Image (cartoon, rainbow, N blue to C red):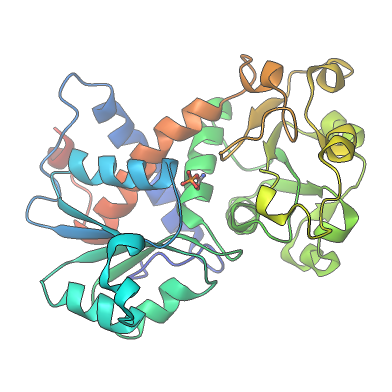
Length: 312
Ligand code: CP
């Protein structure tokens, strides 16, 4: 059982609850290796996936997690809903809740939209990414994957590379990693790293080679193409030269750094294919652990106390 009813973000989220989710996720990870990847843990529970923004990984892994737990699931797509006829967000969601649902998983372009949702529905709300604010389930799957690789998070040295200002992945990772005892250095274009972010317990270093020398693992952020052309990242070639994770750059450092990326990747911009497809990248492990992490989150928010019999 988790202390908070909803999962809206990792800011102030109890450290022991992050640990409980990761521990439970490793149990569910075993279920995913079985020939029949299904347990009855959430039988009778109904979950609606409300996606107001595009998604591949988060949407599919939430849906798979729900099916693996035997929950009933419904997928809502804003583009084919009555929102297009002018129905309000509040009316839309209250009508869906009237059909007796237990939880909503929501991705929305507006920061704070999941918290706003909790003000007018009783169902459990899980934030699947809200604009430039938070992406808590991504950070939890990232931390689970670090745990799997290193056997710990406390004391790990993690570099987060890219546009920190607009990254919900970065912010949730910062809250989670600092809470779990990791050291974090942010690296990217100076105008895309808010200086006050050091108040959260992280450091900033604009020199990627120094960060590579220091780090155990890098979380490489997507260059958000939608921000190109508005002056934030004037040239992808310049970005790659200064902050791209290339084979040549990694070869200058003696140790093997673990490479993570939340996806979707821009190959040849923030990361080269030779790195993304190499043995030091754990990007597809992150994706698999996304299903296990989301199973754990759904189970702990909706299924009550973890009992071994539920996954046997
Ligand atoms: N990592 C992530 O959120 O990917 P999607 O946008 O495909 O869900």
